[in-house]
Amino acid sequence: MILAAILYAFLMVFFLVIFFISISKNNQQSKSKFSTAVLLFSEIIYTIIGPIIGFARFDMYGPEIPFAKNHVLIIILLVIVASASFWVARLYSKTENPILRIIVSVGMLQGILLCAITTIHFLEFIPLGMMYPFMGFELLSPLFALLILSREFYVYNKKEFNLEDALPYRQELGMIPIPLKIMQTPFLQRIVFYLILLLPFVFLQMLLTFGCGQELDAILKAFTDSVGFVFSHKFPIHD
Image 1 (cartoon, rainbow, N blue to C red):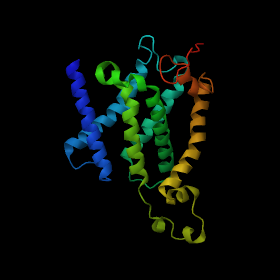
Image 2 (image 1 turned 120 degrees about the vertical axis):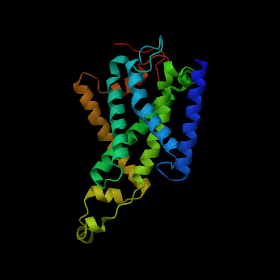
Image 3 (image 1 turned 135 degrees about the vertical axis):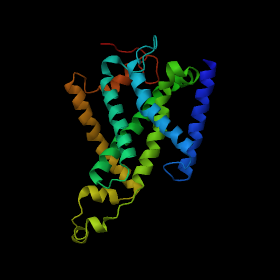
Image 4 (image 1 turned 180 degrees about the vertical axis):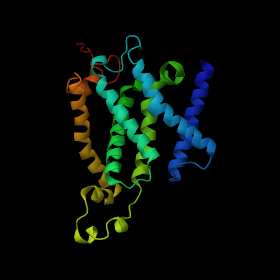
């Protein structure tokens, strides 16, 4: 167990070093095949395998329960959408379809915010995930997924579009479609648009889980009705 913890800690440090080097070089992929493989492996671990294992055994931590079992469906859906958005961005990074890029960006932004909130929620248990990687490494998934999603979100949205060939006459006539206008705006302004679009985007997912029997405020109760974590009620409510 100690050896596994040491190896896991080494992998995390190596991942962080490669991650921040790639950010500093403003490059999506490292020239080293080994570094690229480590990044890809980490992306698979923390955006797919970690969440799957985490949700499969999230109620097996003894007295502590990270998410309220009767409200967790909305969190699972949010994670699936965010993870799917990430992999669409990775596999179709060169697409110039503005609608697809907006939807994928909003999906990744949803994941970034969810990972940030969940990281805070798991804060007290993160050291256990480091010391016992086989039993609790998924507790680190939100933290590393936050870094991975943030990096991909930035890389995906730094791409500039050349609309002269696509819209030779509409641009002159002022008939540029709204999605293309959004993609033409500066990066920070685009984030504001994404945040505005995120509200109905999340609400649609809430309605979907509501149709499956979840309460509309399940997105909050999944955290507050948990046991022993940062956002848990002092006296958790159980249905």
